[in-house]
Length: 468
Image (cartoon, rainbow, N blue to C red):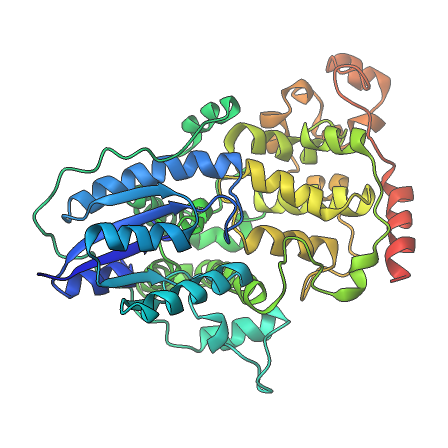
């Protein structure tokens, strides 16, 4: 009887540069693919926006795999039951997967690997989701990195392996008529107009970014009113494209277009920041719940449900934050600079536990990533490694004036302020009465008054955090 292999897909929903799939296909065996909805298992349950993306990504993957003669099975349940059941049902002799790096995921994968090998099943795992695996990166003292700059310095000197090519074709099979297991919340329907999903879309987005925007990336990445970012984060979060593919494509562009070198270097440092978050994810307890710096576990957080609700709804009275929160609700994403401002307002000015904000982002972001989402929230809150210091509290008014001086971003997402002059667009609550009247803005009615005093709340946060 011929051998049969199983490839378990996780956060790697692509067929090019997929080491596990490549190894299985190169063995000349009959190959099956598997995706497991591990609800309640090792993997953190995805938020609603991410589940919406996952549904469409799995559909795209199933079609791509069918073209290789590989059927995709989509099953719900614990992996330690699903995988052995599928092995028994299909006579599988070899199992392949790309590694995961969260503490719970690593433990579950290790136990499953040992169990399967104990039954005579060959199991092989690979690096497929990061530029450098966390256990391969260490300081000169042999310890995990806790500061990004030396991490980035070490990473950029490494030889990042080139991505694997798309596997050679096999006789195509009809794709399985499998239920992706997705139940769509009604609010996610509007996300369709903002995204294209799947491996082909990810590659097209990378090419478009490198051809058009990357040369000026170092400047435009911070300007929310411009299309200056790559928009690759959800594709990376689901593994529709690998960081190695992005790295080498960007390096190739830099070699061919030296004028783009500065922008590409900054872009690659942002890709490295993603790896740094995975480094923290690997070496720390659950970073979605535990402060990475121990003294921040005792922050005297405030309970203010009304303020939190206003924050989620984009009704804080600070236009650039409100614009970001409304962009998030409408599109499933938010400009990175504005994410920092929204997080700072919540965790520092409002002194509301960063985990509540992280949970909201986790549910509403299409690019919600188990390492990057909590890692970035802890950076803003001050509790992460190499974090923004406790005394750095972003002022949404001055930040708006600096990065959205003409109010382009604010006017797009907060249209009730469209007629407010540039000079007042980021602090309409201080505008003269005649200016507001001419713009048909009534603070407290057509647009909310600020939910917190920036100066006093900043001092409150400094007083609370400095005691730690």
